[in-house]
Length: 149
Image 1 (cartoon, rainbow, N blue to C red):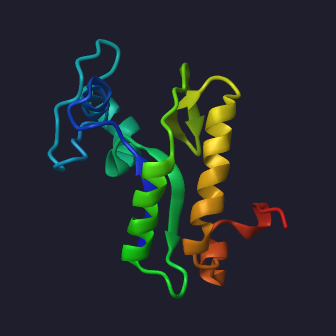
Image 2: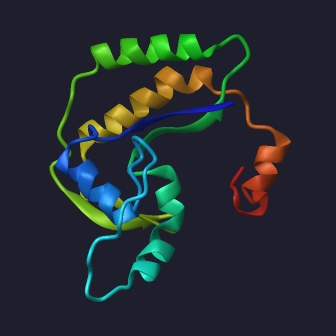
């Protein structure tokens, strides 16, 4: 089994509702939603362009999917995540811009926010002990010829 740490707004947050409409799927209950009415795109075109993202739902990846390291458990990961959330102060990312990551459209921070970079580094430092080493099969799936040492 693989685990990841994601952020998503609460189910009823306006951004979560808008994103569910854009994607055509409510990630909280899995129900299909009609596409938004856009004069320039048909429902089929919207469905085509959102197919991959629809599967994952609207989220921000905080720690990419990983297998648990030997000696760790879902409970130990959950306990560490609860403790981390209790001790981590919230911060504001004041501006987002639409961009692309690996072919997906995404809302990206439109500045070099020190707090966000510090948070990202802290997540790596805190949770990397839970990540099992990558296997040869996983390396092969990542197109190793494109990876740096």
